[in-house]
Length: 111
Image (cartoon, rainbow, N blue to C red; front, side):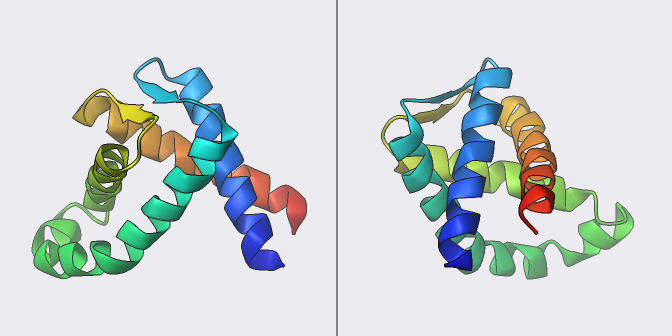
């Protein structure tokens, strides 16, 4: 049950981000659910490999480079999900930071 609640909260966070940032578009909550599922799969399968490959730069930037990786994961997910569009890297970077912030806030209300 907690997994489903987290899924819905993350989809809601993505929908909120799409309303705030002009370069991120979602066709609806259903697309947000699919997009969050794809983002989760991409984060589980691709991100660990990228974290290992970029470990030196992540250490040099004191972990801030992970925001770049999150932006790349958001861009990748937007290419895989119909109805979900992110205009470019900078939009994805701002969107991924805002998505993390809003998701954290929403989850804090539930726990």
